[in-house]
Length: 115
Length: 112
Image (cartoon, rainbow over all chains, first blue to last red; front, top):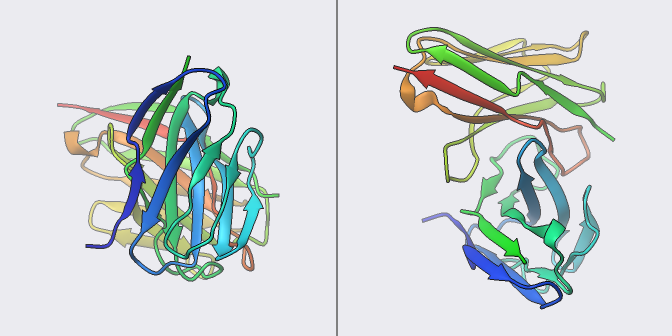
């Protein structure tokens, strides 16, 4: 089954405690991306990756890091989480990256609370 | 960069009524306009899309129209049903770019 898998799905943490949200896709997609969803603000892109070892900032990259060492994985790293990073996070993938064909597949989401 | 405005932010209709959600975009080069539906607690999923060489596209009870001159596109849902209740996102993408720019979403509530 084609899917994008995120872990953890739910996490409560404290300010400053480093955490990683993993994302893995089994569709051999080149393009992967992270979004955060906040009430009234919609889906805002954090980082994206066109392929292995190629990453770029989205609209709201501050406080986040990513890496793309393997095609299937695109972890989101919060080095020092703060309460304003409390949000619902979605990983997504598609292929080919620049084409107007192909659905953007979203993971199930990771709800993060930073106290 | 691209900017997508979406209206209304919330929409309440009675079952059987039609619903219309409107979006405007800023980049005249954008040529791909998908719509995603997000049910409560679920992930967004593509429901319909339209490319700039087409003015209208239908799929059963949903349709999307595009006015390139005015730079706006709309989602039309006819004969709404309670299962249509969800948040709907419009998006736009320009050629040569990988990123979709999303609108802020419309919460549609269909009352029985």
